[in-house]
Each structure stands twice: as structure tokens, then as C-alpha cells.
Length: 154
Image (cartoon, rainbow, N blue to C red; front, side):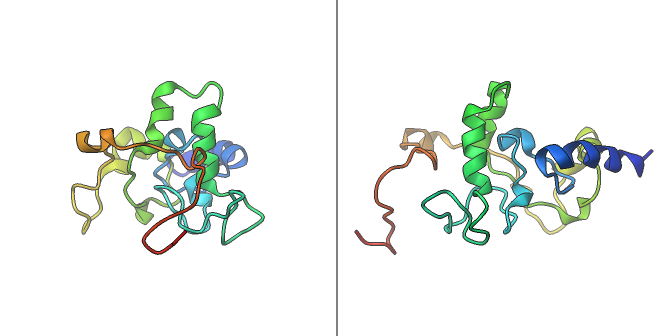
């Protein structure tokens, strides 16, 4: 059964969500969008290369995984409210030792939450600190205006 479960999981999640079998499924916290489909496999939001039209800098024909995740986390029908709020949580880097394993088994056993050797123990999902709650929150989709950083001038 241990070898059969990953095949069953992939046969279900692969065609529907383009699952890459990372062993640490976060579909519920990314608007049912697999972040492993990002060409850069980013698990905590978009890189700085999202094009103005919301497409990927690496694959211009592909919509940015994180733009899609943000949109789906707000608009996907039947997505539980608690899952919608998970989009803002910080996820630890993927543990490549779990690649190909059934995330269902790893979830039940807690293996997907264990920190691999060499990682600090503070790499757990977290919510914004109380100090950050006063900050203005803008989603990627809601932002309108010039992109200004210390490296970009108006």
C-alpha cells in the first residue's frame, strides 16, 4: 500500500491541479494552485519578475502561479474561509526528501511539518505580528499605481 498511495494521489491531484508530488501539499493555502508549477518553485509569493499583464517572466505564455493563487484564494467558490486566509502564511522551503511521497501520508504522520536537519526550528508557518497589523495590506491584484522601490524611480 505505501507505493500505491502516491500513485492514487497523483492520479487524482495531477490532472486537476497539476500536482508535482512535492510531498508537502499546500493547495489548501494557495487557492488550490500548486506553487511547484512556478518555474522557480517559489512557495511564498511571486518573484520580482511578474509582468504587468500578470504573466511569468520565465514563461511569458503562462499566468503567474501566485497571481492565480491570490485570485483563486479570494474568488474560488466552495473554498472554506479558513483556507482563504492561509494565503498570507509563510511556508517553509520544500523538503526535497519528501518528493514523490504521498502528501496525505506525510500530513497524517506529521512528516510534512518536521524540520529537516540544518533548518532552524523557527521555519514554521506564522501569521503577521501585531506590529504588522497596522500596516496597509494590498494584494498583488489590488495594487494600482507606479511600482516604486529604492531601485525604481518615478
